[in-house]
Image 1: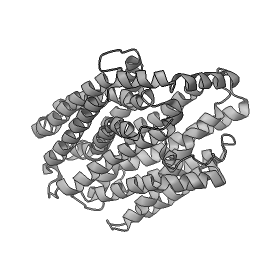
Image 2: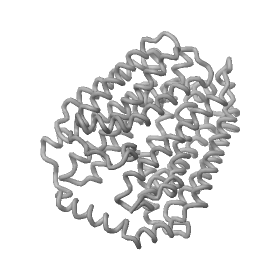
Image 3: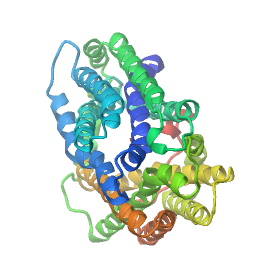
Image 4: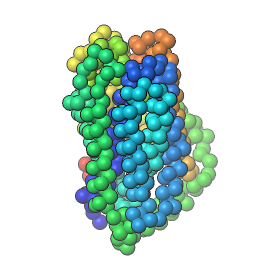
Length: 435
């Protein structure tokens, strides 16, 4: 049984469109709120946290709803198609009409509708790959999906560099070319998906070949042998709690930087064009390229040490950035290291949660992992925004240093789940990280 690479790439266009949008959202919406509507950092942070608040209930709701759906287009594609069409419409309205209007209420209403549109199809889009991939091949399939998502983010960063021009007044920055490029990418991506992926026919073919059922029976057997539903031993539960705290803390640090970086470079480093995107692009590419080396390092020294190393690398880079008086191309080096450190964390943290939950219910603890990571991303834009507004923009990187240090301390208390992962069967599987 071999992975159908062409089909998996085509499925990955849905995740590519999602990541292209979120790259734009995280980079540009905070600047629009600040410079077009004169919102303070606290209010901007609160609005930027809405996507994560919505994610807490929209993603599981539409994921479960799509499980029960049965149409001629399949279970997932109707939601992907509907959500994308709505997102394209509301993104266009947001940039072309709501932003120039100067009416904050109008802008926020359209923004909320846009976030709901994206929430409709993220879970179905991510679920489409395991639906249409034989279970033993899903690790490699997920790797392709992650790479497609990375390409979506890279597309937006490259288009930002090419299409967003410097302006003396940030409120007059012309986002239309960038917005239209993203809208076009989203529309073309989903058109390719809908025309090339016949969900019902593919699923019937895989089920006929036994690619879904046989492995599902194996997983069910393993869960029963692991006493699913039993309470974790006290020492394992303690480690799990410290690991989840670590997850929250490093998301508090990293998400604060990624959310506020575009405003930081303008306020502190006086950089008023799309050049900042080069730095974020380098961080993204460095993370993707580091997955294979990190997988090798983890297999040698274990997950915990690899994570701690990633936290240390990111903390040092935050410290360096905090002391930089102005923008310099050298910052690209440190953001590349931040990307590597973040990859070291992400590749290993979720597997540690799974490793510790083997004697219980894996699904329950997976949900808990997402709760901690999402909750951190809800609160950190607000908390960091308060410091940016009422203290100084210079607090951004010290804020990240503080929570990274907390993550290091709590991670040191984790005593379980640290195993040396087996060598991947193929190079591609090193890209199989949490979505």
